[in-house]
Length: 602
Image (cartoon, rainbow, N blue to C red; front, side, top):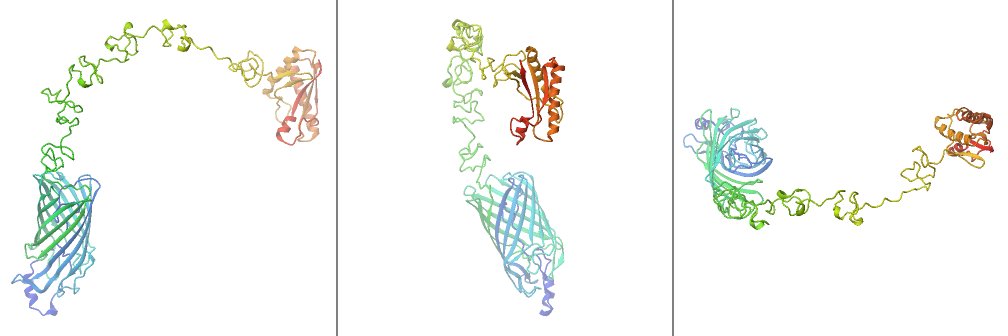
């Protein structure tokens, strides 16, 4: 809080009757804003940011006595009935999140939990409690350095929104901002410091006993670490100087923070005013509880490996937790970074290429303890010369290094003309690949399968499930004939097809008719009656006519294309009069539509 000097104004204030005294208009009088959750001091921010998507939350109890006093211009002492805010208890709930190891954003919700004071000068007559103060938003950008570096630099900006009550001295009724330049760091592993310089930017206005307005702000903090970094203790100072008249409220405090399990940090501090300017509390008590995943509470760390010297077995050589020593995989006392054989224990050696390596008599890079050929240079894993085919003939002497062989054949296998892995000297069939069970001869071929027992093997049978005869046509080989001569008829395997409702023979049936013609040509004594039949669909007269036309069409084909004498053939149509099955279903009607070739003489 920043006010002009009140003493001159208060002289005139005392010279007027009480009923004429001016009333004080409310404004944001709370003069201690906690640092963001994740910072290590009470009021001074830090420049560094650590982590990505790392959250932090903090609850701060902030009690101030004599938070806002009207002073006598002559004595500098508080006036009777001049403590506008005598007792003040604020609860600050803050949350923040770190992003990209570079940025921190935060949200603060301050609550005026309890307040009391003299109401003589207050326009509302008294201050009230249990009120939300101005909400705070903030962001920080780390410009230089990292956490625990000797120094780091950053920019921070806070913004207050007018959510608090002016009558309650919990809000300005307007937006205010606070940009700051921050520098912080760690010295000799056990000392922390931070400092900030900025400007509080707020609307200037007369509040009845003076003016509030923008001011230069500053804060600084330092701390020492104890208990191997678990305890932090140190002073802080913060203050401001109004741009308008140089009014400078200043406070100092001493605080401590202790790391607890479950990523918690508890803090406590007490402070007092170093100036009598309004806004500097005569006494201030602070308590905080912070939850910050990933927070490091460490004591001095000479090698900077994030392990305190008290717990570091190698305090002057950086290494990982828990011991803090550099990696030594083979535990030979030589760090992996210097060990030419980091995975194998060995003595120190002036030759850097053998430093930390076990003895290797043949210098092949395979330690004698693992070398099956310790006096002959070889290669890993056994230290022997390369033998790709494992035939005990080194590749350098092996004429067939990829194929196991015999030493008498210079590492090659014995001759095997047919390539069946049986040496010719033991192969009964050296020119035919075979099996050991048959002394290198191939097994006999399996008997041919003839599923329909027609004398044509299935592999050559175009109709393996139907008995047939031999044919020079591969498509007909092993298939039954399209037509066969029986005692009183020529039986056709597939009915002759006609275009729907006509006597035109479909091309697919010509092969069947050619077979019939061949039978007739081979047996010139046979005479046929070609009989056409239909189903019962449609008028009988039409079916009689259609069946006759179809029978005549077959007769004409056999005469014209089959070279059969016309006087050997007769054609007649019976229509639906001679069905072979009933006409109740489609399948039955299809069977009744047929052409029969009946032998009338032979």
